[in-house]
Length: 317
Image 1 (cartoon, one colour):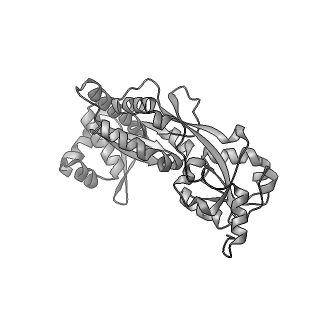
Image 2 (cartoon, rainbow, N blue to C red):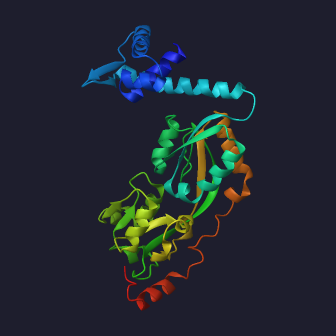
Image 3 (tube, rainbow, N blue to C red):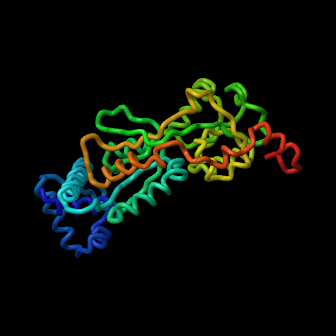
């Protein structure tokens, strides 16, 4: 099975047709068609089904695509491993929305300065989606919220985070879960590890009757909380990147609030870009240590914020 054939097969599968794949690969259409036919003959089965001018993978094609991803990835890893000089190629990296906003700008700056021949392709998502993407080889590594227990994945803690509860400035003091029993919850979709922290604090049974508004960014979540639409749990480091003066911050029990952000990768695999990222995170104390002081930490306590809001004509949100 030729790697070039697998690369053409992968391009056709991703582009959904011969024409677009040929354009992507800078090949003539007849050449792409011929290589796909040769590959189907060599494996003895049909790999594509045609429907409405588009090619769809057959059941056998879906199986082969998973192997093609692995084989092409290992070939790239082998080329990079034996090549002289610094790491090069593509690093397919995943990260939580919170990590992307508050941590990764400094990481990217340092990484590109040290390894200019590596191109980073970033994907954001929930904890569970990122873990699945690394396991399925769609990502090389990812910053997640919970270290996975799967044997095929390795991990190292790189950041310490503190989770806090945020409410509107007009919200009553929050000392325990019962104080937010009647509030709607604003969070990322299911698969978010921080959402599960809120579920544990409130209680799964109680949360079943609570309206949950699912959003895809912390800017939107903070804005909705500020408007009084509900409550949310966020990493405190994120509050330095959004308009956090419009929300009140409440502490959570320490057993729930203190969490780590691990970097995960596939066990036993040592691609130069991933090794370079791991070494950068290990040696940069400014990145792996305590989060930088944020504007949220310098704000008055929640009670003072509520007093200020009450004194202002437009303070209630």
